[in-house]
Image 1 (tube, rainbow, N blue to C red):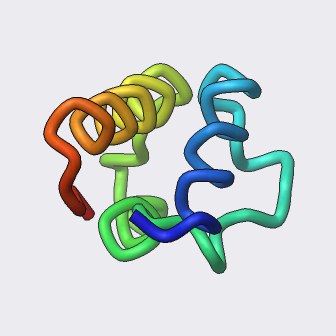
Image 2 (spheres, rainbow, N blue to C red; image 1 turned 180 degrees about the vertical axis):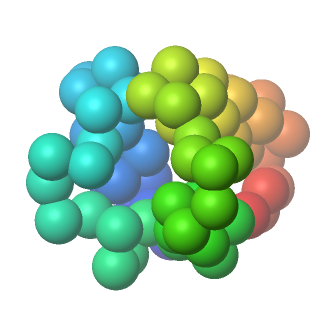
Length: 68
């Protein structure tokens, strides 16, 4: 996992999923799956973003591989 992606995921966790208050979307590893959903009624919730960040970091650390 790239350092910049890990930093963004750490920030998402720190903000408890409230990542939309910052300008992180351009560099977020989830931007391809998250951003298009904002144009539909299937917008990811703050909790969903938080859990996805935790899950991605945990899998990356435990499996020692690139999960993105």
